[in-house]
Amino acid sequence: MKEREEHLNSGPELRAETSCEHHPEAAPEAFPERWAGGQRTIGPGVRPAESTEVRPAESPEAHSVASPEHRPGTGRAASAGAAPRFVVRSAAAADLDAVCGVVAEVVAALRRAGIDQWDEQYPDRACLDEDIRRGELRLVLLDGVPAALYAVNDRCDPAYAAGRWRAPEVSFRVLHRFCVAPAFQGTGFGSALLRQIEASLRAQGVAAVRLDVFTRNPAAQALYRRAGYRRVGQARWRKGLFDLMEKLL
Image (cartoon, rainbow, N blue to C red):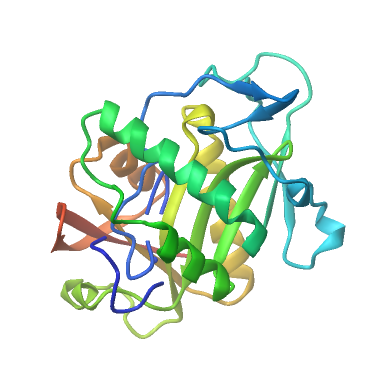
């Protein structure tokens, strides 16, 4: 999405607050896992804060979900062993550095793949901080490591008015800034997370999910189409043309 200045607010394998202009789980390339001070890290010098070790029982908003087995850094599912679980919880102010680290990794991976979608202008630290302050950003942990993030709300960019929404009168939510850290892409993790998001919204009585996806991001396009999202229009922002997509739950 273009820089969301109108409403600092709206993914899957990537996106923003003022619409979901960029959706990277897209970058096909995985980052090698790194270690710092005896701890696993994801991103340039980003170490998960101790506060990220959250158990579902500690927060009514946290969800623990079984995910496809994964060997960090390989981009492939493991062939044996217990499947790791991912926890979804509201991001806190103390998580901002880790959140920005995941986004920075996604931006770098997109660039290596030749996809000019996200950059230093969007989504920037101020945008992500606003998501957190509004209580709309969710941080996803896989075995305690920041693996993905997304924001959900009922706001969208004015350009969404161009969409031929199939059910314009139903309750809907907009998925923004959905992205999966490169080390966890290519494993089915993003698809599993998307299903969990949809199930959670359906349980809340939400009837549809809307989002936008960059037309030059083939992996993100494939992710959403496989998940049942249909194009209902297009919008043009700073980086180019984006498909407006919708799924009825």
